Length: 124
Image (cartoon, rainbow, N blue to C red; front, side, top):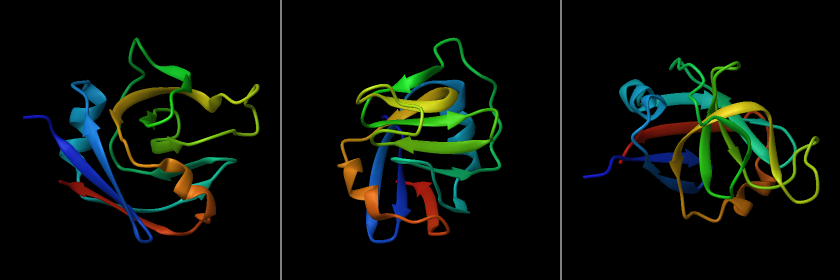
């Protein structure tokens, strides 16, 4: 059975299907996570204790719904639109990141989330 986690931000519950990557395993093993949101354009990210190296398929431009881990910053990032360095309508992150999960949640709903909001990630 595929592992899932729940990311709770304000009244939003984002259900994430984890992939089989090493990063996903490390995040799963570190749950639950309590942190505070940071906002960068149309991306929210938050620091975590899990540590993972960049994987061979790490990327800077992600698809809507992909949940990533930023190795250089030890943070989970959720991009849902343009960032300050996007070209066109792409979701471009600050650095290469490991995709560790996907969600069908309408991430555009995160547009009004502010830095400092609490976030909880737990097994689902």
